[in-house]
Image (cartoon, rainbow, N blue to C red; front, side, top):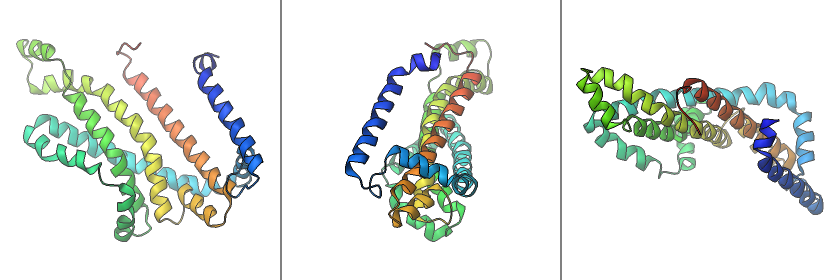
Length: 250
């Protein structure tokens, strides 16, 4: 009940959008271009076994591996940059400029390098999710209070103590902010990779349905991808609340 009470305006907007979509789709009457939400849901139910047992596991594997690598290398690089000014000067501009490169233009190159294996899609996912995790974690590590740092130093704390007792707690809220952005981007990265070259996955299935002019078949895996993104976001939100119990939130 609290969920409905807190988000009733969002629920109302979504409800109005779906009603409008349904009416417009019925008015146009061309399901191969714009299927109605009901037609999409019916299609999703009809092909549920194919989507849930064949294509969803393939997409989830790309998302999980891509996110794990982004967290591993992103946090590692953020820590390295926070400890060394020379490393920060060497890598930070490259990380920023990497976001000006359209990933969708690079994806075909990864297909050439890695073929239609899972790794061409994982690389696309890592490139998209690496940036928010790295930059947010780095900013968090640099955001520790100067007064607290001086207080710890007067109490005899060494660099290791300051890192684990000040820098890491300061960085955790920033890390989770980056991770919440990254999990939603990971779904996009996996779908883009599968669209450009794959033999299974929700993005691949959506592209295959497009070539068959099956509008509902295109939208059904997109609904599933969106649901995966929402579930991942909620999981990160729960993990953040459990990990940051000490933080006072408004």
